[in-house]
Image (cartoon, rainbow, N blue to C red; front, side):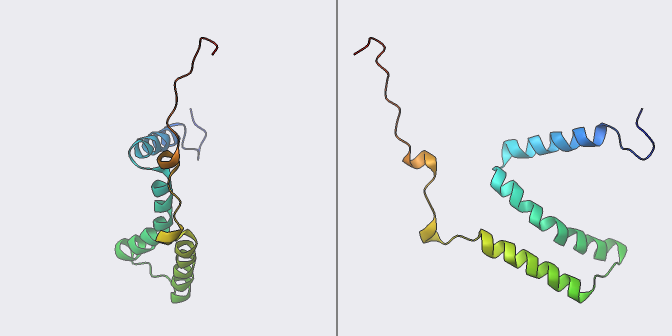
Length: 99
């Protein structure tokens, strides 16, 4: 039995299963980038559902942080490096007769 105030093993197990399901269907980079949207969604839902309005300065700070992340993650088309699969050589058969 879980101690009072502790959720027990079920919520972490559900979280791990949900993460495994998502990773099986989405590249890890794209899935990780979606975590940047969570604070904006939470602020929007708290405003719509609960009527909690954030101060303008905190909204501006959050927008500044997300803009910094977007700038740091941006790569122009000319700077992109081809993936390893596109440049990897094709495997050659191995001669096991000792030649």
